[in-house]
Length: 326
Image (tube, rainbow, N blue to C red; front, top):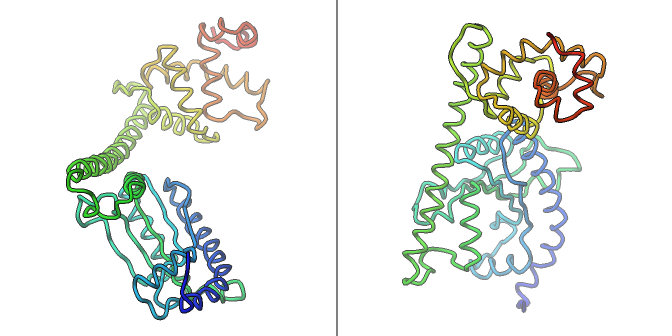
């Protein structure tokens, strides 16, 4: 791209600042990533960029900026893409608690036909408390953090690929379809949030039911076996053990269903009958970690109890046979 001499004068200080912009990205990423993980918020990997020199000069020309290094606040940009709308407010709290907020722009609660352009934008700086040689050159630099859901991000990427920056850019003959597709993403985003809130409610109810079941063996309330119920059951039944990863729990659910276990009540009866045998097996053949994770002890219990499991593997059958409680 050809730049006039006037604009070329801006490139030298821009290039001088690029290493500082990259250092600022490192610090901001560290802070955001640490705090988001602490709250167990699921996000895509945080994306980031330093505004390239072409975009920089184009912005200066387009907006007739006289002091670009004072007026431009997005030389550095980061984008956090979360799963659910309720996560946006949690991430906003992280941003406001950990950075100095200069400006915020809510592009979510506006025109819903422009769904693809919805996000929260925050202009921030590092707080003054960051001091010393590591921060002296970067703590005065403003930068932008965008936050949006994965649905918003997907539609934004699609519409950007089509080169439509706003709805007004769309040809009139295509605008109805464009708005309809945008609406589908909006509906999906809304229902993802509804579904998420229902899962949280269901987990709370499941935890209460299983607590009652374990406290009262005569409790006749039936709780089906699924990922949430098995996770809660293992946590409550074996609180002293390391809790297995999600993939392991999901695999065990499928194993239990293949053995025709349908309810936590049914499973708890088998656990109570077979736990001592499984503990004897564990003591004689301890795993690397000395004791099984909660999913591991569950597999040992089912392996000992289930005739199908033993017959499917002769080695396991011979090993487990001595631990079966008659």
